[in-house]
Image 1 (cartoon, helix red, strand yellow):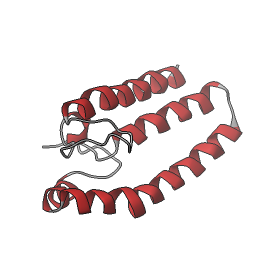
Image 2 (cartoon, helix red, strand yellow):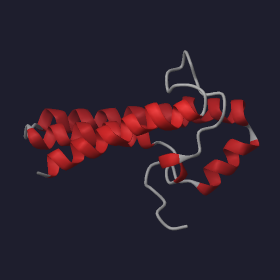
Image 3 (cartoon, helix red, strand yellow):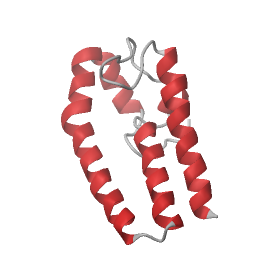
Length: 118
């Protein structure tokens, strides 16, 4: 049951961000068609990387549902790679593109865990 909840939550988060928040900002999550404005609405108000969290939730759901240690190890490796990608590529790129508005956003919104209070 926990696996199913994680799967549905993760998929919902991913698609809500990809087809909702990014579309409203005038683009997609794909590097070939990035948004023209900084995406700071929807789930991006409470955490900076909800799409990665959604994908991680889906993989965790699969690890639980299939009782797979291999998927659990894959999730750990994937999460480390994503974290390094965000730190060393994605965030510097967004800083260059959006400047002070991205810096302000980073000060207000946490990277991975949602900020649930005001």
